Amino acid sequence: MLKEILELTTQKGINLKEVYNVVRNESDLTKVEIAEKTNLKFSTCARLIEELVEIGLLYESGEAHSSGGRKAKKYAITSTTNYVVGIDISRTFSKVLLMTLDLNPIEEQRFEMNETSTPDVMIKFYINTIHTMLKKNGIEESSLLGIGISAIGPLDTKNGIIKKPLHFPASGWEDIPIVDRVKEYFDTEVVLDYGENSALSAEQRQGAAKSDSSIFHINKGVGIRLGIMLNGEILRPRGGDKGGAFGQGHMVVDIHGRKCTCGNYGCMNAYSTIPALVKEVKNHLKRGADSVIHDQVDNVSEVSFSHIVSAIEEKDQLCEQIVKDTAYYSGTGLANLITIFHPSKIILSGPMYRELKLFYDMSIETAMNRYKKLFPDLEVTFTQGELGENAAAIGAGGIVLDYLLSV
Ligand SMILES: [Zn+2]
Image (cartoon, rainbow, N blue to C red; front, side, top):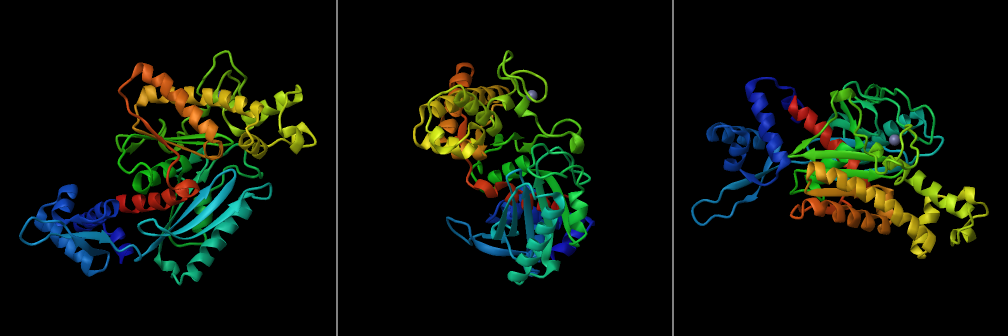
């Protein structure tokens, strides 16, 4: 039934979608509140709500507190009339989530990305996983409302193409028409967006930033991915669909600094990413610095991020100092962004922040020391988010619903 309503183009159809979307975005609203948020006349809005209840898309979720008289009923969406799938494609893993319409995961499948994870292999994995999940949960394919895909840029979101993301462990990730490839197997809407944006919108909808409207979401791992929401709107670079992603990794944090892969000097990427950190630790070890890592590897060339994580747990002085130095650059970059945009919440996600608490803490301390000198009253809260690794896939499911309800 939701599918039929989504296809309506009449004024009434548009109003029905608007009412449904308002209740989807904020559960447990009364008719008066829904009318206010949709700007519809109360009587019109009340009729539309009744209609949506009658066909099972909304239900009475409770009663509002009242000091007397009849209590007003509250409404919520019936979350199991249809389902959505969110796919997250990152450099280190892929995730497929089957979700109800309120974006609660029913089933999830994770796949570690390695040198065999070519586009063909992964697309086959996504398709098979979705089929299996639907079957296992007794869900008809026709109940699948859409598939949202979040990926690493650069993307052509309008045409659904993953253009040429760097540092994928497998080859072949270049100009992949991922939306069309998935549509070959499912007669449903498929939408593509940047993982940083979908993770941000999921944390804002149901995670760590529910009461915020000016938010950064930074994912730091092999690369740096930045999503920005200002006053409730996700910012996109000029050029729209083909504008690319924000290049926070190339924000200069030391004009006389290390050479970056882009050819400039002193970019954040050359300091506070996994490859930069590993390289720095290796350089020190090669020069003979003392560290517990020497006991873990036969050769310095074998050193990986996980060696550094466990060395930090053992309070290895060399790694602690290098991570602190790395965090100094990361915090400086954060302070630059805060100074410009004044966000209220910053979500620091990805393996660098998640697995290195020292790095997380020191980045925040540096950022605060710097921006507070300029804006002592500006309150910014830092968090690692509440949805963890699932944020981008949950958000991808949300983006497909946003899309369907906006057209
Ligand atoms: Zn650069």
